[in-house]
Amino acid sequence: MKKTYAPDNGPVAHAWNAGTLKLTQPMDATGIEKEIEITMDAKLNRVTLVHRLTNRGTKKENLAVWALSAMAAGGRAIFPQEAYRSHSDQLLPVRAMALWGYTDMKDPRWSWGTHYIQLRQDSAMATPQKLGMTNTLGWAAYALDKALFINRFGYESSAQYPDFNSNCETYTDATMLEVETLGPMTQLAPGESVEHTEEWNLFHAEVGDDEAAIGRTLLPLIQQTSAVK
Image (cartoon, rainbow, N blue to C red; front, side, top):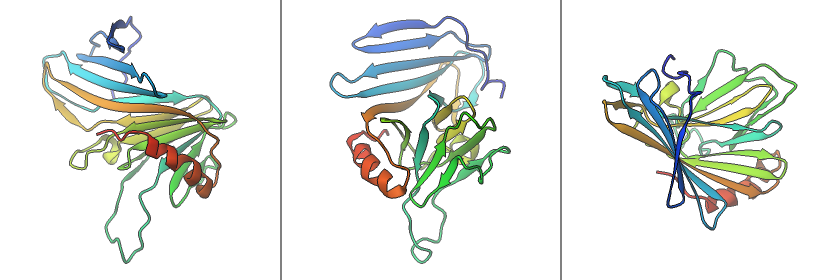
């Protein structure tokens, strides 16, 4: 936890190169240097982010890239369930889910559906909620009024992810909601780097609450976005 929450309040270096903005934080007390490269698509409402950790220390570190996107209050996060299959067709589990000690599955902000998991941000409810999951489909969305944010990210079936194999997490409290993505656990030797890529997409779309409405509006837009490997 010391490495996860190392302060990063110092000045950040920045550089432009061929349409890409690179932000570099100086090495923190743990010996890790953090970088983000941000590239806006010239024609589409799409931004590609490359998150990079570099070990500037003297010891090998076991770590994973953790990318948090803090969303404005009042919206709703949407995450895909694995495709439904009957008991006779599928005997083995298809995903892992991680629950925190303060996660309450009866909290009204959650909607546990057949095809989607939804979490609403409610400024009147201060109790935090958090969930981690193995998200093999590689997308998460946040709907607020008529704005729809879609985050695409990768999943490696042979890799091990943090928090009981979660490559996607969400957290909410009274102020905001986070759409979080994670890279695989990596043994990073001094001088080595590891990268994690996200693709952000923004659409003008009003997404209904029920699963049929979500499917009609959201899935065609998911198909327009790019899967991240």
